Image (cartoon, rainbow over the protein chains, first blue to last red):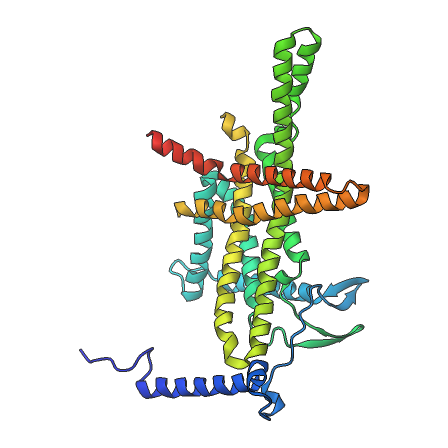
Length: 319
Length: 74
């Protein structure tokens, strides 16, 4: 067996050469960037070595108006994600083969993994029902995050009525997009709840039946059982209201989790690229790849958990 | 694959606690400044936020506790 020389699939001279080039680039970038120039003073390096100071903006910028409605840069990015997902799915599934090629195998693995996740959390029957919602949210969030990591994504600018604006902006960093996704998941929570339990689903939130029965008993003279009925009835009504509040807070917590994580990641990348230009941001890019995936799993998975809670909420306990 | 459900339930808990307590306090502060009842409504909001946080976490983790109890009983 021939002995393998080198490391990382390259021969030693190549690896050493690349390492030296990387190191030199890092040193030059460090000296040219704001961090180095604050340490060593101005070294008189050319100005094209530095990266302009980032100015992250919280609200999305309007790029143009369509039929009077403002189209912001995050909407354009979301459209690109949608077009990409639709096109990609079409290309992959256009000629399905029994023995899949590379692309089809990768896609089948991803979809199969998500499907197994749904079935393992919600059970076979409900998992099948929840799968489209969960998978759509997962794919949309993940590809929105990954699209934003493409080179040149944040550096294209457009002339607008209000001056220069970025043409594209990661859709997850505009708070309206996470809010819309969270409201979608909220809507499906009610939809599946009513579908599984019917109008009795509302009893989870507004349960005054016991309270009214206690009051009736009190009026008909059964004082003791009436009072205890009133007390337990008040408790059930109160927990119902708590349930309603916690459902509403879930929407806000879903929204801010995605928005906060994505915006922080975007600002981290900008600041890393600004402080030490070029190579320093690369590890953070890897981190952001991972975070985009994790946030997508969290958003899709929590939607799945909430839908499961909806169909198995108190009705499931009675069974 | 079985463990994913448990993991996802735990992931949701952290932000939920934070957001519910924060919202209770913020709502209390806002109502206080509106009605001029300086410390009372903040305290009410804080307690309500804490109760909602506890109850929501209890509801989210209830299936886990139940399955653990079943395992111990068997």
